Image (cartoon, rainbow, N blue to C red; front, side, top):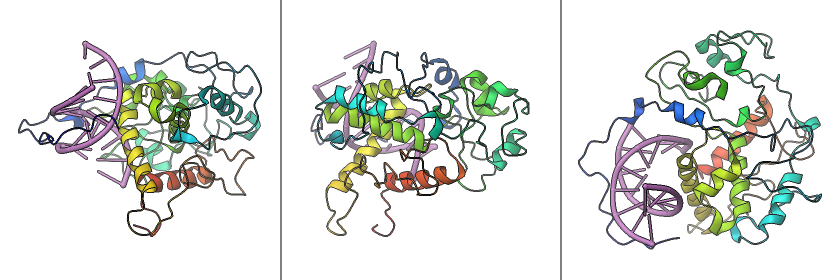
Length: 300
DNA sequence: GTCCAAATAT
DNA sequence: AATATTTGGA
């Protein structure tokens, strides 16, 4: 959208062998740059949000509905939508308790974490609760570390097990040589989408998005990368490739891949799945990922 | 120098 | 496929 860029794109594989980033662990910076995480969006905030953070405008009035239908279509009415956004945050009663099991058996085993019973025992892990216990309101929004070779991922392989408290060691699970790779969970993605929608087409640039999302450890580059893909997705859905028309109306519309509607049985009124409960996580993740991969059921 | 977006790499 | 890194331009 910016510069039409010229046909000078012969760059790229410029002989120079790129350094091997695979093993480049740069966690310290990721985890250290925590912003004063206030209780803003979080799914655990009993107050339904009271942002005092710089990034989040103060709620001066009570709005009601959560809808950002115009999405990135235009950047108008941003402040109003922010309010709506806040108002749309889930109530404490609608959320899955922190005690909810967040670690897969496979990962738990790999990290030697005791997750017996499904709940999260306060002092069960060798890293001591600070390492993985999600006692921070935003901890579930921190991104995860995906092990790739060592841990046998039985299914998807990526799960959250991260918290600022554990420092740079968290992502290595006691092993060196592994690098951190961000995982866009449904929650994070949702936040991303909302941020983008609220910023509007023009304002939705990485820096602004990162700011709005206010997710600890999330970098501009993380967002830029995701944004790139997100835009590709939007493009695809906007221009009928020449067949099978019907991509989702818009990410912010209920039922669309980017704002998955909760299943009747597992949903809370808002259709907001706060935690990666078995049910919601699966669904949202599935849909979100499917969307991002634009591999719509059978369209592709 | 910072930021962005696209291209490319892993 | 998903995310990271590089690249080139504003």
